[in-house]
Length: 243
Image (cartoon, rainbow, N blue to C red; front, side, top):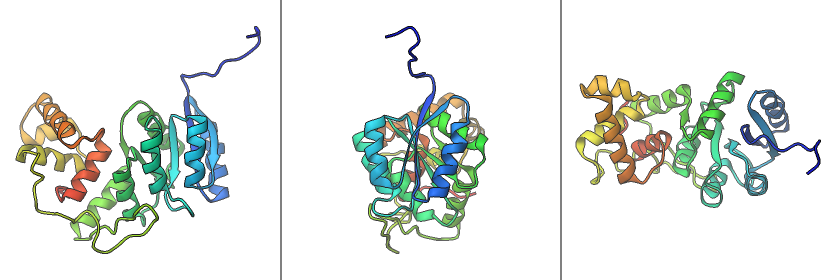
């Protein structure tokens, strides 16, 4: 290598953007490209393109629109979980996309942003999921919980974007998953309500260490990896506790 050659800065988070709307896609490329510590490595026009580019470019994070033609964001997220699980998916959504959000949780998305998110929120979500954490936008979580509290059932979109009135978070509601203890189910409900470990500990009058132990047991029993997936599990198991 010559003295003047540059090597890629692997301390920077490599991001692939996927959105079928050109103006949105180009706007995100411009915005995210200005954020410190983040490099945009590609821009995909649909889910198929996102999977192809993710395998080729090996991004750390894929910023994924959900409602795209041919291959939507839910299917692309599911395929990436199988083909390149190292790439964390951060979903872009709108308030009208409840079924898509729930489906993306099931597919393995680890972060959620609304399309009116500011630069600081986008940067925080990208860096959080790149570091192995989950990030669920409070507005998205609140909308899901409001739908649950009003008795709505999510028409969960399948891999091709179809949904049915009988599918969703209400399936199996009222039945405690046999592998969880009542206390673990209670902790899971508090996680779905967006509470931190400290808040759960205060509510249940236990230590944070005890809460962490319960959460570790939940992870082990469900085979899930992060809090965003636990939220999805709580919804489809009927354990979410609005309010």
